[in-house]
Length: 382
Figure (cartoon, rainbow, N blue to C red):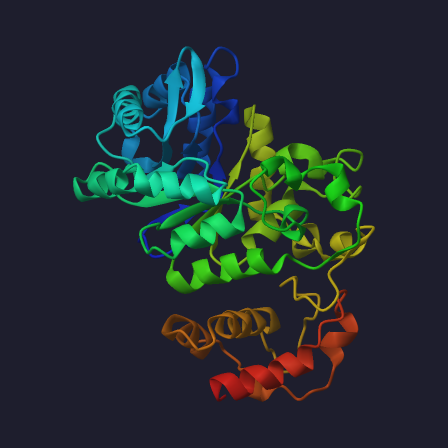
């Protein structure tokens, strides 16, 4: 298992994490089986958005004797009321729900306390005005949560939230179909057939800005819906009408700036095993570029997908990393110190590019790589 920094939290998290969808299977007995397998394979991070008390208790029981082996990302504002899940912004309900959750999980702290499911600007305003954000800050000061998170599908809302400086982890939906869609307060727009009937060109700029801003500010992204709820794995169901593999979906999501861990949904141990094949997959198996280039009515022309089809470079440049650092700096309008230092430690730099154009002849997306290398040399100075 490979591990990544979760932003500036100091947590080293497994690239593959667990979503909680399968924890309730077989009358909740699947929960322990999944945690047993996760521990064996080095998975150390999971998300628990569900408020079902039986599920939360099953997780608490599964963690007995090994709490320190897992980082818990569990959701504030996801409450259980009248025998059903609800999202609440009522501070009193949120506080009661948090105490109930902690008791069921049988732990005295969460590694990440995730403010649950905010897709509207008015909802973010309610989180601030109703005292929910202040409550999360209070819990952090008390040591009951170690880091504050937010889950969202809307890049406009997520940007506003992380720019407060209080959100340390963002749970966000990342996949090559949703990334084409503009911000919306209706999450169903992300998979609506009519949203894909028109010609689509490249990643939505606000989503790209969000990922790059998270990287710049040190906000780690934990990824939900990397498979689009499974739709992207089936050509009939996929909005793009082209199927991808789990490995391709995972690699796409992990290639985005600030992406740290993929919360894969698994209803069985075998399904979790399928996602873990990513860790041993070949570069050919991870390659999503040609599949994306085949999406009908969708063009990624001119957009670097960090797919490394441009390699090998005769001068041994890591073209994808140089381009990523260039884009991060351009998005900021300056060179953040962290970006400069990451660029500096690359083995080879843009100034070594001989402008041969071999890379461009291989790029499925017709990126102007030589121009990017010149821009990077001018920007970074070497």
